[in-house]
Image (cartoon, rainbow over all chains, first blue to last red; front, side):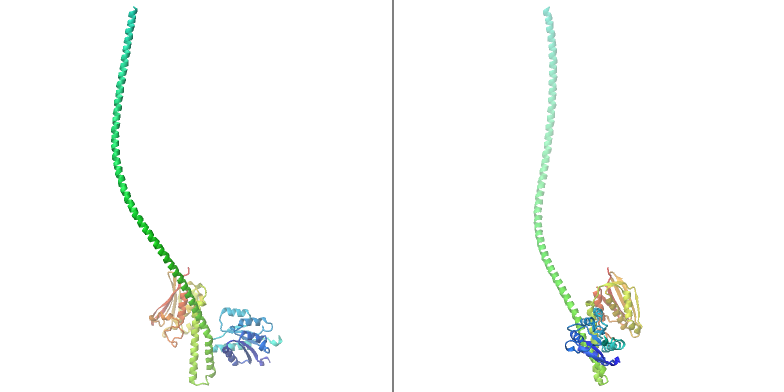
Length: 148
Length: 354
């Protein structure tokens, strides 16, 4: 059964505080998951393209991407993911503090799968993470990447 | 006989000659008389002429005297005039000098003004820059402060969430105050961000129907209106030239305040209307709320100034400051009239677009 296998999530987030909060929220969730955290854009592409220290990294089932990242920003990372034949089917969820219209439009133009704004309030933040889990990890049928 | 005949002939001849002489003499006499007459006549004429000449001479000499006198007079006058002209000339020379001096002074004054204008332009630019820097600062500060603050509030809330039952009441109280403070600070920062955005994130003016805007504001406040059973009416709201989102914010803030500061025993009634005063539209939002003491008139428009405790009336005290900034950005003014326990009317003006 597919569901017995843990879902692998890649969290690209430069703020360790936010990363930990996401981790805490996912810990409370129902879906078994393995959370990989990278802290900048370059580390993210290294992970996804299995470069340097991430030669043995696994292909994530879901990517949660912050926009404001050091070295390589979120939109650059998104463009690289969506330009790659192997990676583009992975749902990318933008989770950012930015409410700016241009960020939203640019992200969707780069084929982000959805755009979520990080709530300021903790309970709402947990709600958002829970809704990601409910929708993307439970409701949505994702392609089985091993067959691609 | 001969001789007699001859004698007769001679006598005849003599008689003839005598006759001729007589005639001639007569003729000469006549001529002489005539000539004399003629001379007499001529003489008379000459005499007359002389008399006339004498008379004419006399008249002329009299005229000459007169003319001379006149000339003398004119000469004197001319001399006077010349003297006057000399004086006038001197005066003109003096005035010219004065004018030249004045012109020089004016040039100096002009240069001074030009310099001062230049200084003013410089100052205005400096102020503009300072203002922009301040706005940028407020924006960056409120934006960037949110990040660490979010960490504080999130983790104190996480502490509360996970350890609430494992700690004693004191610990719970401490956590509660930390969470409460962080949340309030977040609200302040968000408001400060909104305040700085009035000018940093402003849009250009367009045709805005304030009746639609009032409707939009009421619809955005639906929950609050229902909870308080507020009655809101509007009348005669015009189309204006404005930043739509900002004007909506003004309407919304003022209506929200009118409901929030209602009397406990009375349902809130709010009336929105507008009248044209010369080249300004004057909007008014009148309520039957608790009123504001007029001595606080200026304070209510200052950022984060509050007249009531957060316990009685929640809020950060930025709503009216934002309204003031928006209205001033539109070239209008905002003020209120109020009577304690009777109600408050907020007024603001927006220029009529030409």
